[in-house]
Image (tube, rainbow, N blue to C red; front, side, top):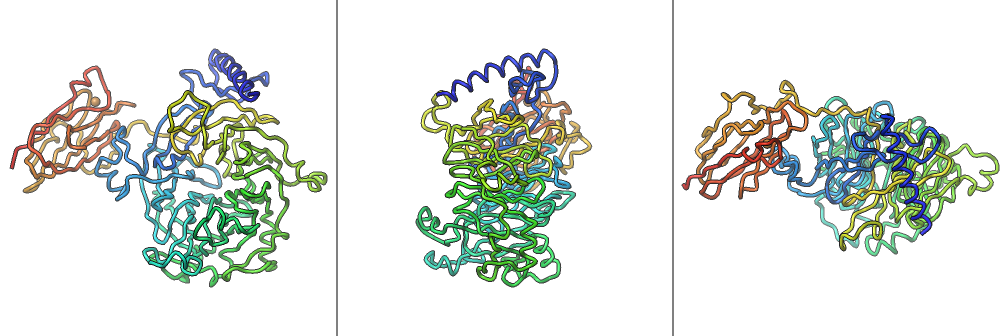
Length: 622
Ligand SMILES: [Cu+2]
């Protein structure tokens, strides 16, 4: 009850402070000049300072919100049709989505140059169908879906972007017999099943993705990861919650060992092995057995049933948390390199060295119950989500003073309750060398009791925490559809989107801009092709003739060159639906199967005469 009271009080203060700012005409900032209440309230007409890209989980989308307002601005459809944007109905998007109409987006990763966000692309994974997609932040649209990735099953441990976007790194949650497509009884799991770590290569100019290499692993279930920087540049880290290699009743059987393993992978070494022609191939992909190539992978014991592992902004401190142990373990990567050099190993597993735990641990910080993910503010502090406690702990990264080193509880400097069962948390730029700090968003799994009832199917909550001061302050709350597993936050100045596709940049081969180039033609015995332009408030031409059995191809160009002047194109009873943004061309292709006259019309309100923007598809019987 107490937390609810303090929260509504702070909301009132926020409101007052936000309105005050509006009067000054300044941008919103986290705290007032008097150090007063934080201003997450962004008044009408003012804009947020940050983009917040939420993964959409099994909705298959990415949600775009503003920060600090938490106002939802846009949906970016990726793996799932979105009729409101014509996505998944046009030829281009259908081909990109392939045979699946959903995906499970878990971890968005922004592209980077020199360890900082460069505002070019956002990569997202599909845990269900083993794919990676690339969204261009030039127009906030999905440009490529790669996969299903060969040999990869349960693409959960991604999308982790290396400091110059050389790779997006992927690890498998599930293990299967390899090459993928092989049968083996599930009882032979330990012997016949394997996991995979993949390096998805990214073309530095076009962003085009391809599978660069894969590393075979035991059938551990790989979980979250991160990429190194600074002293750990060239490395990537993943935790595993099933080094027991259980294949049934995982809740019990995968929770037996007091320590699981993290994998420390030298991706530069993997790339070298492939470049030198020393990798094998599996399902057409360069394939590395780490037992045969020294230096490509090491195991590090971590606390029980870990979920997350995160590299600090300096790249020196690698923080791993075990769900079933109330500590965040801090590894010193400089000591990791020394241990590797000195072969300071406590054993090996299937030919891969296990680094001596004692030699590389800087400390175990008692953060609280159920630690999952750690984020960094760039001021020497770490923040760890605590699933079981439903709170976020703020703690100091090393170097620690003598008193803290003796009593690690002194490293924990603040804790705040969230509502509740927090999964991921995000701080802007946490995975870069220069985090923004300022705000932390807690993404909570359960929202029950926090909103007016919407029945049994309930959204997730996001809570906004001001981290600009010594103590964390809860300042706002919002809801999202399922399911923001993780998010990325980037400053608005890093991204420079287009709002209109300029005519000279439209590369669609079938784009037409002049009325004299439009028209409907028979282009085959059973094929009719229409080139149509859309503008306020008509289509030209507005009549398409075809015969039953014809394939009808419509290339539709929106010739508007004005921001937000979007047209739609829906045909009655044909499941045909496109949206064309200003200057954009889209293609619809379908077979007409019934005679009759079917209206088509603009679905996206565009003008006073929007209702008049219509035409007819007239289909003769055969
Ligand atoms: Cu219109």
